[in-house]
Length: 265
Image (cartoon, rainbow, N blue to C red; front, side):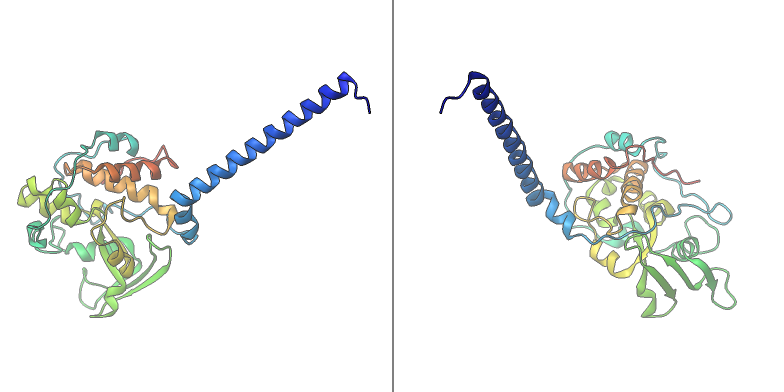
């Protein structure tokens, strides 16, 4: 059978197009496989949880800002992150909670201890124990780390369901600059409302002293605020980040490039 030159050229062109399509599809498949075995498998494994995207910082009606080491820089959290020093972790074998002062002091001198201040700030419909204007007895809120609606009831066991989390864990802070702070500055760091949120007890225990490279809230809607809050705290108290921590923060902020730092006011 005789094939014309024009028909031959058309056949060659279709063949090249077919091979080009196959190459593109193969490249896409390879990229998808690489993504899955790096970040994808973890993203797929994470439950689809949605909850609050922010948490309160200060209620000026009855709370006062705690003096930091230096003011939180206003503007994009990503820019503030670039201003933080990048270093490795310092030793942790000499860490003690007492280095940050007695737990839950009334640092802002408003007459109520820090734990009750944060419960009152974060819980909806907070009620006080009889005869007190400070001790929170009960309340309910949509918890930021899990997105679940959590009820707080004061009691030896029931109180564990809601804990006050240090957004920048004190153990992490100790390894990243807090050892160079004065006792008063460490006390302020431990009681600064900027660094505190009411959180689900089990989620707080799971986080422990992890930084952003080791733990992020399951509620993805809260991650931009969470990372920006950590950056704000570290900037305010002259703390540094590790390279892995900085990389993790940048990945989160890539989805919200206009996320701002948090200024207590």
